[in-house]
Image 1: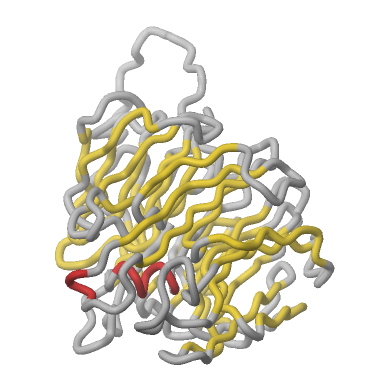
Image 2: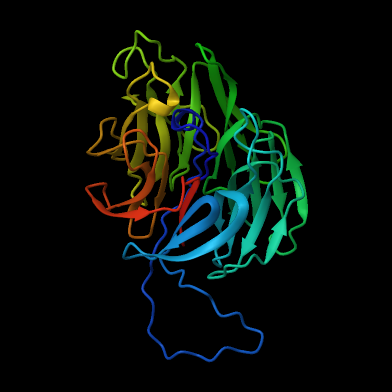
Length: 386
C-alpha cells in the first residue's frame, strides 16, 4: 500500500492503496530439514522473511515477525520515504521511494525503485530512470511503477531496463491492481477542488497495452481505493465530492464513501454498490471474496488540521452483502494488507488527532485486534511477505 505524507484528511481523500488481486500473504508450513552449508558466493539472508510484515515509512522499511511485537529488521532508505512495496514470486522486494516535496507538494520530482533479495538490507539494484514520485508498485512478469507525475513505467526485473512508458489514461493516479487475466486497472483523479468539484476514472489496460482498453467515469466522486477478487470483479472505493462546511458535521452534510463492484474485464456493469460509508481509504479481499473496507472521517470539520480529530473503522462484507457482517472501530485506518492466514493489517492513527501511528494486526474475519505494531514513523506503504 502506498501513501504520500500529508495531512490525514487529504490522505483519506487521495489515499494510494495498492491491494494486489492475490494479496493474501503470510507464513506457510515449512518442512524442518537439517541446515545446509552456504555455497561459495551465496548471500545469507540477514533476517527471516517467513510471514513478515513490511511497513514503509520515512527513512526505512520496518520489518516485523509474524508473531510478537518486536521489529526484526530495518531496511534503510536514507532521506527517502518508502511509499510503495511489492514482491515477486521468488520473494524479491521492490520499494518505491519518494523524495520530500516543497511548499504544498507532498512529493518531490525525483524518486527511485530499489530491488532487495529476500532477507537482504542492502539494495541489489537502484533505478532512477523514469521514476518520479512513485505511488504504487506491482509485479506481473515485469515491474510496474505508477508515478504521481501521470505516467506508468515498466521495467525488466532482471536488468532493470525501462521497457515502456504509458501516459494515456494516467492522470493524478491513486491506485493500481492486476486482475487474474493480466489486465491492469488504474484509478485516477481527474478533478479535485476545495469546494464541490471532484471526479475520477477507472481505466483498464489489456496486457502490454500502452493505451486504455476501457474507461469508466466517476462524475461526482473521487476513487480512493482499488481491489480485484479471484473472479476478476473490480472494486472501487470512493468519496463523494461534497466538502465539509462550518454548518456541517461528520453525520450531516460531510463527504460520504461508497464501494462499487464492477463485472470483470473492464465491464461497466455494476454488480453491487455499498453506500452510506465514511470516506473509503483502503480495500482488501480474502480468498473467499470477503471484502474488507477501511473508512474514516474528520469529526470536527471547522478546525485547523493541527486540531483535527478523526473517526473510522473496518467493515467486513460477504461476497454479495451490502451491509457488514462484522465491524471494528478504529481511528483513521488508511492502508490494508492480508496474509495467508487472512489476518488483516491496518495502518491507523494511535490517537484521535492522528499525531502518532500504529499498524494493527486484526484476526481473520475482522473480529478483534490481536497486536499493535509500534512504527518508526507515519506508514506510507504496507505489505505482507508472500
